[in-house]
Length: 381
Image 1: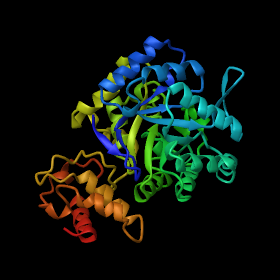
Image 2 (image 1 turned 180 degrees about the vertical axis):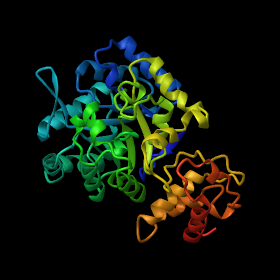
Image 3 (image 1 turned 90 degrees about the vertical axis):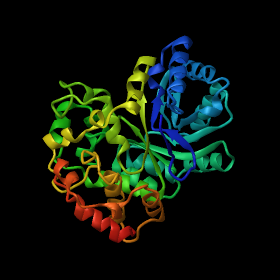
């Protein structure tokens, strides 16, 4: 397993995380088997949205003796009433549900307190102009949570949250199909194939790319949800592309976007975990998602960080150099974090020998040599 820093928090998380929603309604033996397999595969990031007391208790029992090895995303606003989950904006209900989560998990802290499911302007205003954000800030000050998170499917709201300066982590729905959708498309329509097909553009939505770049610049980590589009991308008959993608392609696409720390995959069995973690040992060819866009996407001249250009005889990670160049060009002054990330690359743009092999392999006719020169000028050799 590979690990990445969670934005500016200093926390290290596995590139693949576990979404625990699929262990709901399972008995303890099955829940423990899933958690055991996750740890065995090197997963340390767990998203625990579920509000049902039984599954929270089972997860807590499964974590006994290894709580310190887990990074938990726990949601503020996921409550329960009359035996059913519901979204709450009532401060006391949020407190009760969050304290219940900690008690049943057998812990006195949650690593990431996730402000839950904010998909409307009204919800955003209720949370950020009311008592709930103050509650989250107090939890962080007291060390009950280490970071404040925010989950949404709406690009504009994610940007607003990042710009407040209060958010450390954004949990965002990210996959190749969603990136071709308008950033303000409502959640329900994202899962209706006919509406997906009608709304898909032939270019990455610039607002979504701007969000990823903003997160990278501000040191706000992205944890990815819906990497498989609820499984639709893995089935040819449901995929909006008209053909199936593999888990490796979906995960690699997510992990190559700026700002992303981890792709959180919902798994309900040890087998499903192993299928997701197969990404770690997949070949570059197995991870390659360029086919997705070459068939559906007009991106001539634009790098999508697919690394189809590799191998480079000068050993430059061309996709990473292009990513940092795009981040540098997206702002008037290059953020120190971007400069620092660029400078630690073992080979940089100044090492380019202008052989042109990368340009021959690029599916999108990116002028790589020209961009290497531009990166050299912006960052120095």
